[in-house]
Image (cartoon, rainbow, N blue to C red; front, side):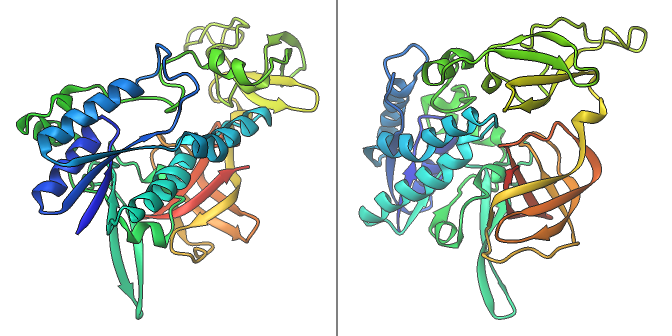
Length: 365
């Protein structure tokens, strides 16, 4: 079976290719170039990443293909990223990149190369589940719960999952690095990439300011409408943000609470260009018991049951939260949580699970 592996130059995708080769698959590595606006910038690692991929492929003994998806990325991911920020929301472009580039453009390209399957270094699992005479592919959480990336893959569908392998789904990250070192892969100690792929480690405000004009406005206290300061653009702020508001306020403690509590972004008024803030991490304005989700994707192709007990993640780093789906339709879903959730953020994704099975999710509206 021929498998084309998406390789980024990191240890995870390198070991994914290594494992598949050891298991007897006909493996081809594929490096995707998705960004080229400033690939000679000090923050862009594309050139070094390609060198690392070539080195790994040479050690493993597999062929390497390089493909440029930067045009598709700009049209399908980056344009949406800018549109969302301009509308005052906080998007997660890595999720859109997975569904539109890594599991669509990459999948189509790999099939054109004669592949039977594609593979990536994501920490997730796929299983074929048969019930009541029906067979479906399920997206499962990874064995290593601290590295599970099913949250970022919730927009995948049956056709994509049927053609995808996740070789790292049953392996812990610490063992992945050990396997890479044992195989002589120099990337065994390479630092994991962080942040949004096309921004890298560069200052976020500086990057966003290249593409969207600044639009200064007032920062007001939500409770009494006092003017506290000025923001340079609502796009630079997200719900729950504490740092970078530049309006003072020292984080309080039990002995020094009240007027010195830290300020948090709580609401954006796009029409009047006002950022509303509140004092105190647990201010009621930051706590919500339900949300509306739009742009839904259910992996099975069927709507989940309403009023069943599920869990959901309203952001990647949040532990699974007990919830139920009160209503679901073509236009969206209402998800109610057992406990109030802090700083639910429009534009971010809420992902629903039933035990270890990722059912799908949507965008927080």
